Every structure is written in C-alpha cells, then in structure tokens.
Length: 140
Length: 118
Ligand SMILES: Nc1ncnc2c1ncn2[C@@H]1O[C@H](COP(=O)(O)OP(=O)(O)O)[C@@H](O)[C@H]1O
Ligand SMILES: [Mg+2]
Image (cartoon, rainbow over all chains, first blue to last red):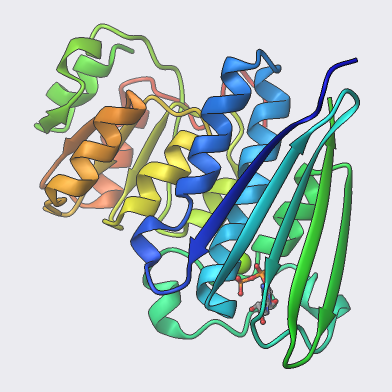
C-alpha cells in the first residue's frame, strides 16, 4: 500500500475556454496509472461538470484529486455565491444559468445530476455568500 | 463505417487527424448541448454539432469519442483544432445543416447506438 497520489488545480473563473483543462489532465494521468476506461470516464465527466459549474456559477475555485487504493476522491471548492436550495439544484433541468451560458453548450441543469449519476458518493457543503464544496468519490 | 466515408458523405473538410480516416466507427450522436452529451451518450464515437468552442472538444474527449463534425458552415479557430489534435480526435467541418448531415449518415448505416443497445 503506497502513498496516495494527489493532484491540485486552480480553476480560472474568468476563462470559459480553458474550463475543463484540469479534467482532461486528470484523465491523462489516470490512463497512465492504468485504471479501467469506465472508472476514468466516470471520474473525468463528474470532475468536468464540476469544473464547468465553478466557472459559470462561482468565478472559479480549486480542485483536489486523491487517488487511493479503494477510490478516487475529487474535492471541488469555490468561494462563489453558494447554493440556496441544494435539493432543487440536484433536479434534472433546474438551472439558474443565463442564456449566454446555454449558447455555450451548458446550463441545461444536468451538471449536478450527472455528477451524482457518474460517482459512487457525492456530498455538497454550501453556504450562501461563502461558497460551495463538492466532494465526490468513484470506487476503483 | 470508416471515418473517411463520413468525410466523403458530408463533403467535409478534415481539419486534423487525416491519419485516422481508416479508423472504423459504428454510431454517432448530435447535439448543441454538451451537458446532454455528457448525460446520455454511451459509446457513440462521432459527435455532430453546430456549437463551436473548446468545450466541444473536451466533451468529446471525456466521452472517448473519435471524431467531431462541425455542421452549418461553422469554422473553428486554430485553438480548437489544436486541442483536437492533442486529443487525437479527427476534426471535420461540413456546410450541411444538422438534420441533413445526420440523415445522410444514418441512411448510410451509421446508427444512433452501438449494436442494439440503448
Ligand atoms: N459551484 C456552484 N456555485 C453556486 N451555484 C451552483 C454551483 N454549482 C451549481 N450551482 C447551482 O445549481 C444549479 C444546477 O447546477 P447544474 O445541475 O450543474 O446545472 P447548470 O450548471 O446547467 O445550471 C445551477 O444553475 C446553479 O444555480
Ligand atoms: Mg452545471
């Protein structure tokens, strides 16, 4: 049982075009580490939706990924506006994104449901005006 | 169908990945909403879209897709082509509209899903 491998990324809230770059990098690293395509895909999609959310709803943040023996954990933290009603935000189709976001291909209200669907465990800690932390785990 | 046949059928211009035109693909999907692609796509290897931004390529990469086709005369910037090249994704553009492009590929045998799945 070796040391867990960790990755840290800063996600720039001002640059939509670079959103997702951290997820692409994690995907590459997990491939190198030899994980199954299914595990890699689930981690990458969940993290990607989370990254996009941080950019479009919260002005950026940080992502920490820890690769353990039993699971891969992703922690996405931001100091954005927080989520007023988490249960509502989790519903498919619920979105507060404006039309300019939809014209970029996101804002369909599928992000959080996707993150839940592709991970084995997901927790949201959020406080209005302070920010949001999303913790997701994928079993390996 | 070979990726090269998609190029022929759609009178498309290949922007990168010319060396992979012999590669076989069996199913495709089309959408301008990337979240929908991330939610519903299973093993489709080709994405047709009228949306042009780097997130299209990242979405295709997340879904392990092999080929992205920009329809409706869209011309992607060099940054997008570069991203596709780095990801090993074949990038094409066609003047056809979405409905026509999909119809042509479907009629030629490309399916919406892999071997009778859903
Ligand atoms: N990191 C975040 N900070 C603040 N609000 C968020 C964050 N992530 C999600 N939300 C809220 O939850 C809603 C639903 O998120 P999601 O399912 O990803 O859909 P979408 O991003 O398409 O709006 C968002 O519209 C937004 O109101
Ligand atoms: Mg979202």
